[in-house]
Length: 401
Image (cartoon, rainbow, N blue to C red; front, top):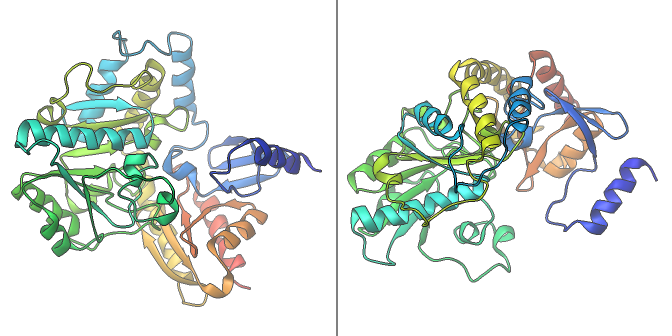
């Protein structure tokens, strides 16, 4: 067997089968390119589901991590450390908010947002004990913990993991009438992805997010924006909410905040909202650790220049122009997205999204399928115009047959 086959066989034998990865074994990476154990190079058009917005081994981020590795990596929150205050202050400023509660993974951040909203509902809004309700959207993806799958509509994510956590109401994404009907005196929050990534990069109807923002304000309900995938430059703005001039009550962030080096996530909100926590009520051994803060501070500094947001907007126009040319019904049936992010529905005659992903892999391009017929394209924001064009040319070639 080849080295690739040997390593895949070992992974299948000893690793739980909770993923079905493409049959490529990556050994190194740089910028928008990855190299496998056989020495073959691949253009990365997935970017770790937006965790690698700044590319593989971005020099600024890696150097920040190296410098911190030589000083201190973990204290736990039992003690203060010298990177924490700057991280919280600068991330709050980037978001136009006041306070930060750091965690590690995106799912942890969403769990934290759920706990925050409930506690705010009881302590500030005055919802009766155990009655808090959070309204979410169908086809959502907020993570895979027991609580988060409790309000998933994906049977694959939910099956055999019950009993499920109560306290959530699901309404169709983009349906303002259903949202209005779902809100009650006991509703403490509306939790939405401004663009639904896992569902196929679904963009809500124009005016939906501003209307939800206003409705939440009228009903004294927190508007929580899960920008774990859509935020930090991916859509051509710092946050996807900005495309419609919306400022939520709470941002949930992750993925790109760790620069592709370490897991970093955070809930960012006002002092009124995050101020509901008292010592001992929530925490994380690794959340807000010195290494994570050092990396995230470099990410924040890079975003402050606007360079990556502008690049995503400019190259995103190029991406969507080229994909629109493929959307003739014979090759591609629909394209959605914003900035350097697109969901591409493949015409049935070309096979499933998985099959198209495998054919692209054979041509040196890596993407990922979702929900059968859809592939997601989300290259690192550092990708060159030439590499983007080449990758899209490979997609066109795969769909010519």
